[in-house]
Length: 148
Image 1 (cartoon, rainbow, N blue to C red):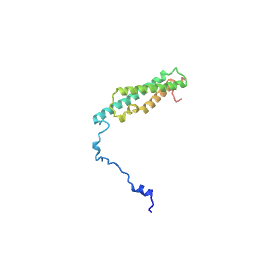
Image 2 (cartoon, one colour):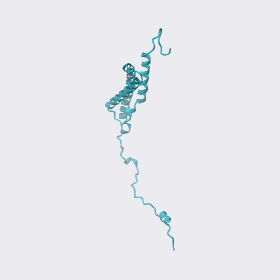
Image 3 (cartoon, rainbow, N blue to C red):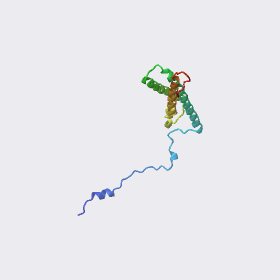
Image 4 (tube, rainbow, N blue to C red):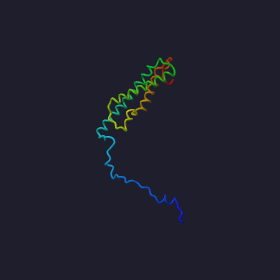
């Protein structure tokens, strides 16, 4: 009598794969996003540069204005009010950026928010600290400088 070996049957069976159509060339696949011409890319880059410099200008103005706007606020509230003001001005700049009608592909939509965000934050804080320091210099007899 021959013994039945289940391991042999499993080894003998080969999985059947359905016939798949082979893709011979990737040129047949349509692009998922519209292709931009060099002129459109140049136009978009100029608009993003304008947005960047707009944010830098807003950071300088808003950082300086924060010193005077929040002068009556005391203590920790002044810091949080200024940070909230910084965020509000940035959101306004995002609205201005959307109004510029940038023709960005879907993969680059985040550039509207991320363009110049680091520079905006650091320049805002720098201008706020600088103007606050200059406005609140001690008034001793003689010449006042921040370094004495």
